[in-house]
Amino acid sequence: MELSWTMRIRIVLAVAIGVVLLGILPWNQIKPQPEGVFALLSGNISRADLLTCAILAFGAGFIASIACTPFGMQIGVIAAPAGMAVWSFRSGALSTVFQASPAVNDRLAAYAKLRFEAFIWLALAACCLLGAYVADKLLGKKNANIPDKFDATFKLPDFAVIPAAVIGTVIVAGILINILAGDVRYSDPQFGRVIGQPANLQIAFAVTVAFMACGYMAKLFIGASFIWPAAASAFLSSYSIITYSNKSAMTYLANIWPAVFFAKPAAAVLPIQMVAFACIGAVWGYWLAVRYNLWKTYES
Image (cartoon, rainbow, N blue to C red):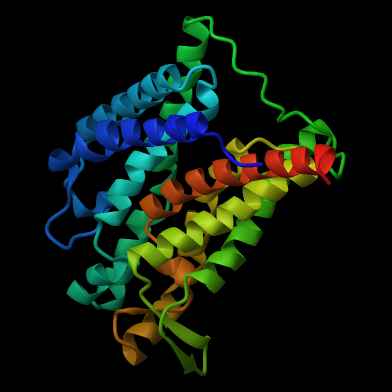
């Protein structure tokens, strides 16, 4: 089943709204120094800036939902992640932080600041979801009759669906990102191999595809909403940083390898990159599962 031109226009419109309102409008206020990383450790993003971005994310979701009538929230939810993706592409690589301060303690301090940052960016995505939801409710708008309700392959108890989606996504997406985001590799006696800093485009590809696969499987196999694989991105970011940034690993890397090398590719992904592209991928995978079910039901 091909997407209609009207549907494509709605998707482009939602993306454009998010890019303008969130990706471009506040950029001069929150942008890092030239070649700096887009992260709170840069010290240029205040609480007031975060509040402003939260309001803009809410507004992006609200406006995109209105603009994407009659599908509303079903498409408008991608607005803020699209804007955050702009931030991700314009960010410097994490390795630039380590190149500037290669000492072990400096690397550990940087990772400590990044450890739970992904939950802040996930909250911005949630503001967009809330804005889209509010728009639909305030306008009394009924979404189009989208056939996304169907029986999952495996019937789990309701209380188990969300944990299964989140835990499964952390495991599967982590494996896929470490496979897909690998750059230059060299053999290493301790880690098996070390990986050079992936480019932003490679990170975008790896994270999007990994979470697209998870969103697809979560919907098709256990009937989970795209919300839960997307939410798992923050847990995966924290897990990867905590797992691959222990003191012994950082000491070894600092003593043996240049600062552009990491034990695993996931350790080189900034929290903003993980959340932005994960949200897009999870929504994409969800609707691929819906389309597959339609194909299986009516065209196979």
